[in-house]
Image 1 (cartoon, rainbow, N blue to C red):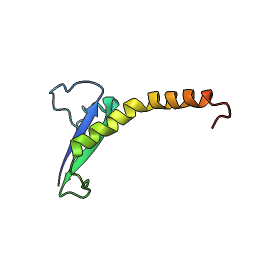
Image 2: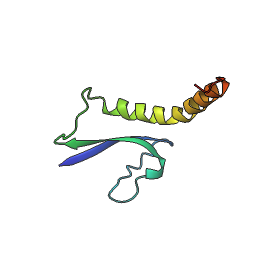
Image 3: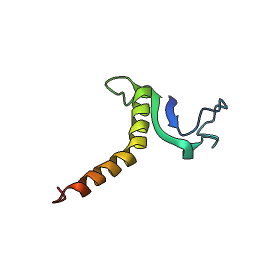
Image 4: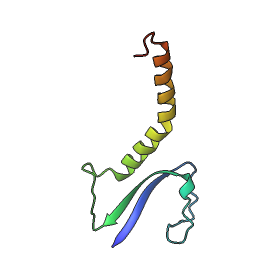
Length: 81
């Protein structure tokens, strides 16, 4: 079995080929990852592994601001609804 991963990080790729097995994987900087297995056990219907990882990371990044705006909008409603 082979396994690879697409990961989206808070810092640029160092090019050092860090890996999970050796413990050099910068897991504290990873905000989204999609594991790829061969043979594939889980396959997204769209086969867009990398794009899906980027979407997860973008959603994670945007969520605090979206929640802040939603709370602000609710505060402006006289009945809170």
